Length: 415
Ligand code: 7TS
Image (tube, rainbow, N blue to C red; front, side, top):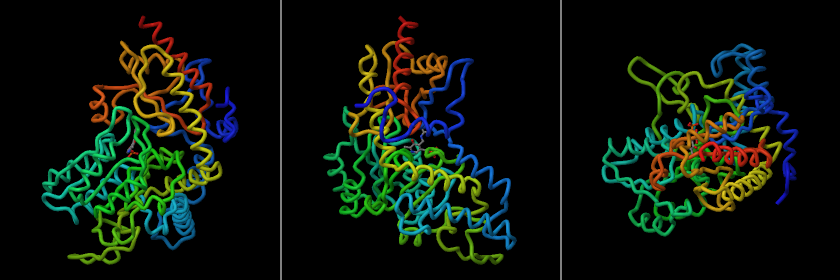
């Protein structure tokens, strides 16, 4: 394990120089230590400049104007879609639908595929570690259609219980939907294996990839999934745009999600015909500048290499687990470093997570405290809240040491 800031896989000093916010002081003389990337990541200058440059030089609505600006804007937006498709190994940009965020991507599937394909008594398998975005849309649909929901349990060490999963598949589910990486436990789930099992049982598979695509190399064709949802703002891109990848046959057969401009081919007063993919699911003016910013984020991540990003985070999380667990009274939830991404949710005995976060903030350290929109998994561990440190490509081993020093300070204040 390398020491200091020496993590050979990424040139972190030069990466940090790309992110303007990273060099900010939070209080006079107190620099920012940003450990909240699972909530949203910071943006590099390359992304900020791509968005600014679009507004300065090309701003126009897309897919409709014949003028030069509209043509350039359309080309830039569609080029970004192609780059996103390449980034995740999607066979075609037709399968890459731009939404508002990962949440909307999952709701799109629940609304369109779910309502067209699921009927009373059908079974959906989820897990106990889902973010509310991959839980509540299915609860809503289940209530409306009288569907059954079943949950793969999480073991004490934060892994999915695949034996129970096997048993649940005997119930012939229509859909299996689960997170690639938990935003609370950090667990990376075996998507390829679980997808094969689901397909053998005849189910369609949706993956919530909000925490995986930003942090791991991902190849759709290897994973074999049917739907795959993620958010731009968690991968160095702008807020306001998310991505739904879908298998083409499924998307083709699905009814539209929202109605309006762009999603139609022809409209009469009493009828309409639906546009081709991906526009069929993109009603109204899309997030144009955000899409262009996302394209720049994908370029940025590709230039570093996702394998290197993953390795860097493995160093960080291994150090974080070692150092956090040495603090008396700290309990970290979730699996060992080899099964997780750069997320460590923990409690400090006798101190409320909000107080932990507040005292860390005094030292410029940004962590999240609360239920992280994953209440059921907190309940499973008899918790109302945890403090969560989450890491990304710009974080250093020294920042983990600063977090640990901060936690010793919290203990001192509360002792
Ligand atoms: N799925 C997972 C696993 C997530 O972590 C999040 C956001 C979402 C879905 C929803 O993403 P959105 O872009 O649609 O909001 N997670 C977090 C978090 O952990 N802290 O803030 C947001």
